Image (tube, rainbow, N blue to C red; front, side):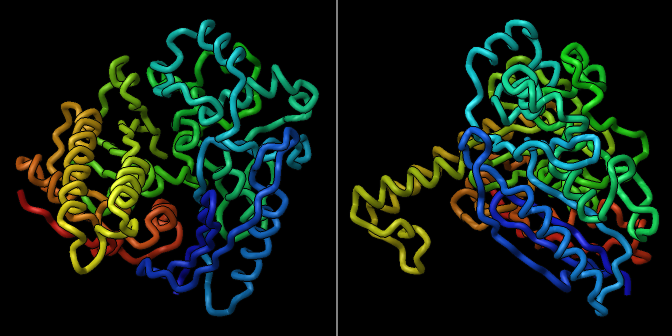
Length: 418
């Protein structure tokens, strides 16, 4: 049987998963790697340690006689660059996207490029706009900047390291996995301020600042290798359902993703924290964010502290005290209303009939029932996909390794009625 190896690099957990032809996980390795600090003393990923873990893990799995690895892919968190010299050796830390961005540089940039957010479908987020990291390096660390010959977004670099690849084509000549360059589209089109969605090209400021030669160019028809994690997590749904839908991916952030909304981002939507992703096929994905998980955590903590209860009072088999449950119901009602407002931004005028919710809130009955009751004209489902991000990366290259049809049972659904 053929197998596919996927490297799934999260900010906390690093995973290597092997899928069989039925998309069952037949092997998984996990690691939590300690952080280091960058040249300014700010916490960041330990890049040499990550590189060694990738190389060792891939070599170990490829030697395992149980697996016939016929393809490999990678997915990783975004807003992060690996900066390489002419020999493809990293010359800078993997700067943390939470690192504070200089206010004066940001002010100068936004005054110079007044409509940059709208054109690049990117809210102003500092280092979370990965393009601004290049601007920062050029203007604040010029000696380091001069050493950089190529800047790869983290998913692209992880893939190249995983296949033992070189600087240009991402693979060695003898490697059986792939002969195709990575496709940077999903990273470029994710709040980077690099990609002009209206022109479908790099934004003018990238060329104006002399950054264009540092970046990988999207190649028409290139395989989806090295995927941004949010884009990868959407793929199992796109592979399973043809009818238009919105996916609400819930966690600390609740992100409504609509791959069927092709309307350009408006100024009003941008001010409401909307943005666009870019799929590996080059199509925009309208997204709206709500800080729901964080709000839920704070609300539950406040109720628990006020009433002297454990913070899991709402999850117990036996209901908590009546007053606590009344307050929790009010919290959830408020959250559902905010989620609906965020969802509506992603819906736009698209012909969506189904709402899928995955992540933590898919298991929260008050949240799910609240959505279903408020949206009687739509079908609302709690969805569960095992290893969705890694699964998406494997599905994206299905034709390269898997002779079987894509299974129809990848996603478990539970419908909530109004």
